[in-house]
Image (tube, rainbow, N blue to C red; front, top):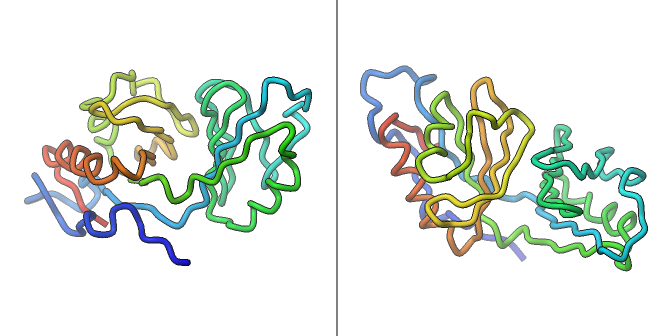
Length: 195
């Protein structure tokens, strides 16, 4: 079974908005990401398992607000108390998850095909986020994340880097097209490159 990306017929490559006379490094870069394994992990309230003893892809489950554990292949985003979103390019990590997180202690849900992922990179990335989200993005640093809304659509924002700013934004697949148009409209002011 093959998957069709959420924005397959929506994402357009090229230059858009205020791009004339600008260097390539001045553009925002907007891309759709796909083919990631996305697993929601929730520890049951009745579970007595200590999360400090659990490692997935050699990463801890941190129970600290806005915090992320990461390596080159996998990112574990704090999604709420005893609630995480694991995003990985390694599909085989699912076997490790099922072995280490027993179903009497954790709810494991594969939500890979239910999310659209848009990545934005460039010096004005936070300005784009400020246009539709009520969070104070001046405080968002590398390897932090948050759940919020963007123009009334639920999103999870993962700050990958802050030099230059680079974020991944996850939204429900059903919001994908509307969210994409909302983000790209916000990017027109600065000029963006669809990659």
